[in-house]
Image (cartoon, rainbow over all chains, first blue to last red; front, side, top):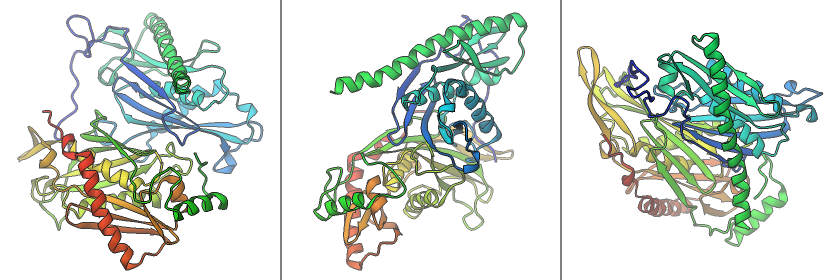
Length: 248
Length: 275
């Protein structure tokens, strides 16, 4: 039927003082916390808290391909399964994966594939499972970021890490890292991911309206934000080994 | 740590078995020793209630969501609670993708029955208008790491998530249910604290709280859900058989352990007090 409380969006997304509803400046990221090696059973795993987003990722592989006919004789395959928990959104999501989840899985998989040496693993598969347990805008960017960390944690050879963040436009202003409300009620949203070995963009989607000038500027803003995300990823990876070293 | 495979080697199996015969376990516990629970509630902002629970290496995150729907015709003034379990493929190489399999349905059903028959949820209060509108509570358990004994971990996480819930109170108007501005919380939602307690059995040795390597070699297990005074559900699974004496003893052990867990975890401290 209906829920008793409705999900409402405010009319204005920028405050009088020019800051955003959560108090951030236009180019500020939300608080981000990353951790690797959080799921013992997995070959590699990572967890990220990006604002209110909470996401687990784990990597299994190289391992046998199921179903078998998907295996490629000359190279390995990468499969990504992005899923959202039923309770991660305002209105309970149905447990079965929807079209949105399948599309995002594909986009993330194609974004990460360039950094892997799949040709070295014929007949096998790498599987990345991403579970969003709490969502508040920008889950595909956070998921890509955390999936790259999990791959690195699994010790799988990579050309570089991949970092991702969204840029967009609300109330006519360009902003970095859209929150849930800004994503739903804003003018446009553009998730971007970069592979650092060649400094190129490997995930790019855009919804909304922007002119050429704004587009150029937002890509520059994305680059700045991604540099920060990248540093945080490196820190998270190093932290695991610092902890091991201190334990000895 | 032992490698996790679908088939466990005879040598490993014998190792676990011989140790159990001597009253020892591979993780150093005694036969009747429980692993430690760790519980954090209200970790999910989007959920009405949530609990992040670890039992040894097993980790589960459970969230509660609600909906308003029509009641069952035979229970026109009672709310409904459904429990679902997802064995996420990220949690273990043993879990596969796809629709819920037998294992996840059993987990959800055993936790559900423990709660349902214990008069745990105040279903009478979760009615807005008889025959028209009642609450449907969804308790969804997500396994993040599988380290054995998911049922007991699930029971605690479901209870933690329910106790920490904050469900908007509704009243019936001509245009349907409307929010009164208040919430159901803590004791308004929950009566009893049922807990499932699981025992493993291999040949004639019985022990408490099987870990994952133990679960892979045991013949079977038995889960007894208990409130403070009553047994509310039992599930025997696997091929093991139990004598009547054993079940009597295990009943007592279940009460004893549930009492201890209730005392250690002090569930009511997780009741949501915010407005």
